[in-house]
Length: 110
Image (cartoon, rainbow, N blue to C red; front, side, top):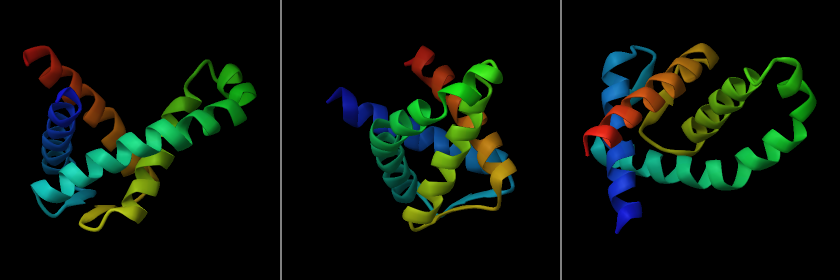
């Protein structure tokens, strides 16, 4: 039950983030919830592999390279999810930052 609520919260945060950022487009709430599910799967499967493969670069950049990995995950989700479009790498990076902030705020309220 908690996982479903978390998906709905992330979906609402993604939809709100797309209203804030003009380079990110989500067609509706259903696409946002599907995006939240795909992001959960990608963060569970692909992200740990990328983090392990890029440990030297992450250490050299003092962890800032993890933002690049988050943006790549967003771009991969954009290729997978119909109804979700990101205009470029910079928008994916900004979307991941805004999505994290909005999700944290909503989690704190709920």
